[in-house]
Image (cartoon, rainbow, N blue to C red; front, side, top):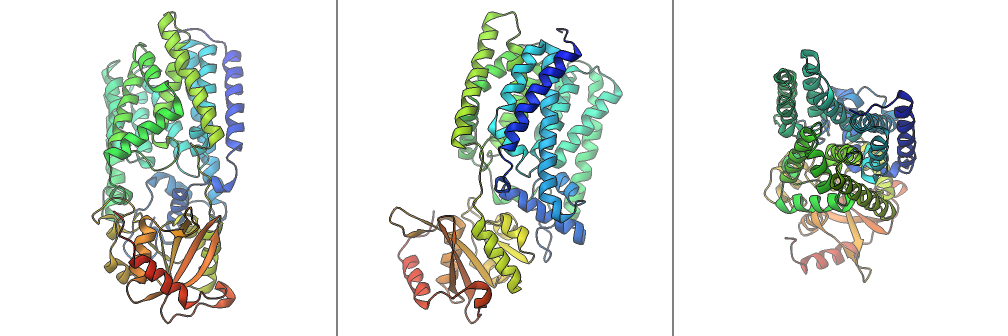
Length: 495
């Protein structure tokens, strides 16, 4: 392995960390916190208050989040500081993961490959955005980077094996899909020394402990999201396309270069397995490539080390991957295609109104920040926090049950409408299904319209319930209800 001095490694690391910090600052606005993060915050709040990580206080507990370990950590935090702490933990985790990746590249290729690795990873909008989005991504990145360093570079010993297995078990609490590909890294490490098999013991113990807790608490071995958002081949292919769009030719070049390196081929094989597992499970709805962050680390290390190789074609492939990834990152940063600025002013306003009015239960599809502000019960018409809708037939966003609406009986519904080219309101997915169910049957009326960054939020109230004008403003005229009913009756149901 090339010799690098501590001073060279320190200077290289400092440059890369400074770039990453600048990139994180770009996403410092609280509106870059993702909807799913607010779901985790609310679940953590309830865990700290009532001892159960449930999204709602009433009814059977539902695991609406997928990051059980991260939620448990947040449950120990003062709610007033929870969003900030979550973002700081993610940011610090990502910076640590970046440092470990740079160190791996430095030990395998020297300071120049390490600099290339650090710069291309620090320039990625997706990696930085998701680290600062309030979710577990930054912590998962540091776990994945540490696992890679141990499995690829550490000498085999009982302690190292147990450490690797323990880290993978911790990763499983952050990402349930680690159960699919976590053991593969251990198996690959055994090609160096069979003592690495001991890593399977703490991993299996951790998996058993988490699944026992999950079954005892929720009556399910997987989060409710897995039922609400069933995997589709189209979703996996779309996620692959978005990953390639965000990383240029880094995937083929990185897997090729790393796969032919005697130290990195195990990491490349693991990264390929991660890719297959994530695509087979339908990818992700979020912008960027959050679920392929560990693969990005492998590619960054492989491409960085590749520019220091003596084989000309490997160097060429590595430079091609690095340059195209850097260009793709620049395009993504300029177009904000790998991040999401959540427009939530209208939802925040309505959540405050519902809280002040003492509403007990609200039904809506975009539960995100609304559920963090509103302390009452929430009927999630998207199904993430509702087990009945989640287990219903259909694809995500098109699962519905009139009987479930009647059973949950929310006093208020919030429906999102987006203007079309003619300025008329357009409703889609769970918003259309909810609106159709509420207005084409007796029970609800339009109570008010509220702006939300160019969109319109429609509040539906129960017939006979009077919303306080001092809180909700002037009520909508009866003609609004009649007009919407007529409009809905002339449109076909969503497919």
